[in-house]
Image (tube, rainbow, N blue to C red; front, top):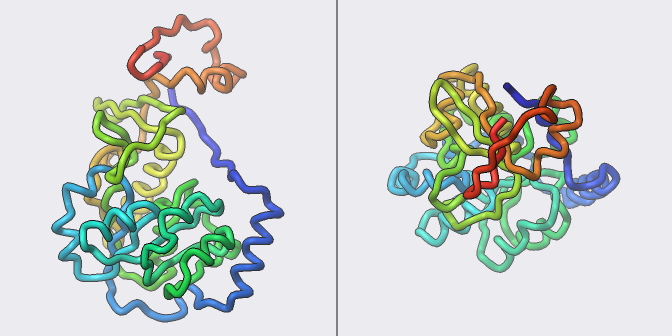
Length: 268
């Protein structure tokens, strides 16, 4: 069984238009307007696997984009990076306010409070309203197009495994998880969430299509999808059942689910 998820934004369309108007009014440089100093880019997500490659990231010969909370996590470990996000809400502001961000690549759809919090940082704006490709729901999945637009010849992904283990959900701590999906890929099982599942699908697709440009050192579900993009859903968390039962999964209402207490998962 395979499930189809659709990414729905948390911010109303009218607010996104306001955000974009305010962002472009600032007159900041656009992403890609100036060629990068280095041809290579490291994109660092918040997955725990990033910690396994910390020394490699520290020695990386090129630019580093750190997604959301990964920026502060790297800074605490003495690694300079560019803050990267496309998230339109203001929830990321506290991660960067008064913390000395020197450079950032942000979406034109980001809340104006984020721009204010960046203060005197060198900011490149990525005008996402002009983007014609659909690249999933996360900053990581969209960064593939951002890297190409920015003029990079190669991009490697760290901390983007897109699946969860018994370790903390992120390198910089735990994030409360609600909706979870357990899937099987080529005989191996992974616990993920709808947004991370879509992220892995988009990232793995770009790596398969453009292996000379994109690569990963994240492991997890992302690596599994690169080798085999097909999967079977084994179980979902209980909070997902009401929506899945509305005709989206034929026969689900007649199933006798078995609960896994530790994850509150229901076997399909």
